[in-house]
Image (tube, rainbow over all chains, first blue to last red; front, top):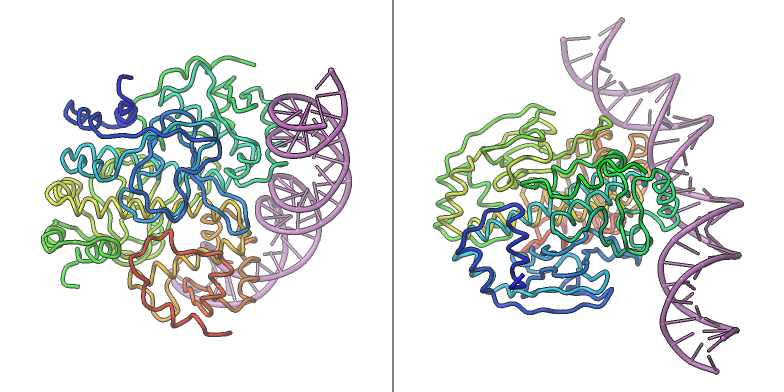
Length: 252
Length: 252
DNA sequence: CGGACCATTGACCATAGTCAACCGCCGTGG
DNA sequence: CCACGGCGGTTGACTATGGTCAATGGTCCG
């Protein structure tokens, strides 16, 4: 992409129509790049951010710190995501945002971003819509973490991540990066480390999916969707991302 | 209130500043009232709503239908809430909205509502902010349903409901309506009916809270907050709702 | 009175948590 | 070069929380 800001354009176009003037407005937003080390925080719970974060490379996560000591990861974010869009209109962060591996983010100051949404309301609506899809993902996480077996939760998570990676263009045929330790998988799905290990073993035996050292490999998409009780409609895509057919009917 | 639409004004003012023109614009929105029977759906999963719902009286809930058969309740809504504000900018509902008891809602057509947000951007931002707080509540639900004991989840839920009821002005000193069966509490917190019964018994013994036949009674707010690991900051209030002191130090 | 719905309780079972040992890999430093 | 330590993953034994199934009781209402 010629401009780093085009990552935002591309992302918003996954669900919204942007006029040339909208695109031009986004491109002209002054932006600053920042590199993050693994586990580094971009925003901490309680902060009052003045700039919005856009993921360029790598993976970020939102989390609640738990009084007991651990974390509850809330969501994972890849290229194009704006993991703190809420900071635009809520004063204090109720959660933190950290990098999971080496990552690069774009920082867009609130002042100019808000000004743009005033000048070009369709951009505002697109970002609003982005935050609404975000909320839909949270709702799905409630359902996932509440009423399903651990194996199903894992499968569902893998479905979501692969599907979203396809949409953002950061998956290659049948695989995508997923830089999480099993401990972190546990903190995401509400389970302990040994439980994750056991559920992973069970999943592996289905030959639907492979996961090790930060890489997710889809072997049988149809079976994984079945295992994960995955229904993509909550992600509100305008069109199906390309690439699903590659792994749909490969039997293991 | 002179106008039913003032419920919306009041709600938005919990977190946003509205000018006289903003308020006037909201008041003039054409609105239709609708009464709901207990368990009646206002919106079904998959619908393409053309009007937004505002709760006037009673309690509504959002839910995912589960393939297995049951429901996962996602959130509870009281006076002033807009449980489907997302319908403004997402075409299909990824979840349903139903009444939990006899309820009255206001229906605001999307066309006029969107037109208002264009004419008066600050109203748009206020509603946007409302949806962002919504998302924060979902995040908290993820944490609540994932990493806590059932007793803690219950206590947390009670804290949130009482706190929000105070903010919306539909709680009286130390108590509020909560028209849920224990089965529904289970479908909200990701637990089975007998588990809820047992956790309720344990909670009752703490003398912090009383719950029966749809009525929630706070006996010791401080203790309940402690039991529920409740930190109100995710609700993003501008000011503390009145009424907490009434029940803060009453020992049981 | 009978039925529907909800709450309660008990017995039993399954899933997942806890604790602990151990392995394999990798980077560091003697 | 190899020893060591740290981290992440795996496994096992035991425990505990919660699920399932089933029976019972209470209340409201037709």
